Image (cartoon, rainbow, N blue to C red; front, side, top):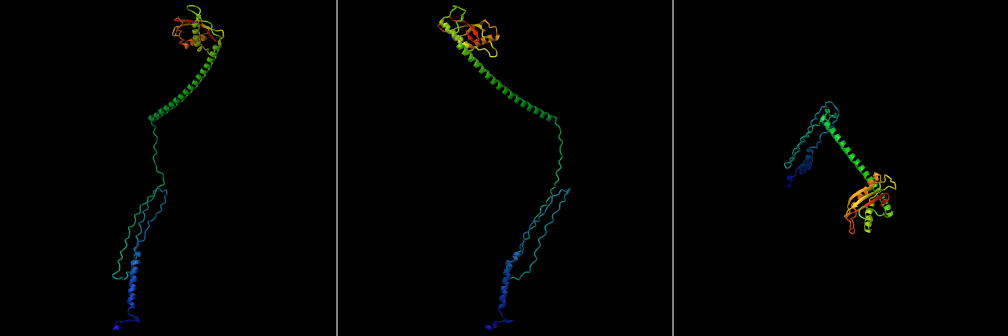
Length: 292
């Protein structure tokens, strides 16, 4: 019964050929699925690179870039015989060529600009001159102020030096007055010619205050024998109500310093209550060494 299905072909068994054909078709299908899609993939395309030389030309010609060459389509491969269960292969999509921007050449020639000529404006020139004069006057004013400040400083230093000299001379005269013998009784011009003890004490107080302001100038030297008699009349509150020279020295400068000493001594000490007289009049003898 089994012998009727056995077929021989050229010395081979009847099942070997179908088996080889089936294996071949399967290998062909596997090759088509794995390898063929890679063959139809588009290769990456690089943009064209252009090199531009910048040269100084009168009228540079702009060259139009050539359009990119079309991508060659791959040659069709012979379609293999596949079974009905084979997967269909889609056609690859060709990308659109990229647009290349036109590169404009850059000229190296310097741009020609019109140079405007300066037009003289009298009003502007006058304004600038006024501003210059104003700045100059301001600088001169600042300089004058600085000079005045310097002169004031020098004057202040000189005044301080003169004050110290005057103070030293005053101290010298005071020392002379203190070391000089006590003055004799003054000449009383009203009432009795002799003074009481209270009046003598009051006279010493008055001459002591005036002696503090009696000083001769340094710029002139006077003879030791020169003298002047100056009469003063004192009220009870110490105010001098009358004064005059009974005898001048003969030197106007000396007489001026006598009056200066009296003026700077006002007011004088008031008359003590123990003295009954409302006024007292003294004749003061001014000598270079003191007052008598």
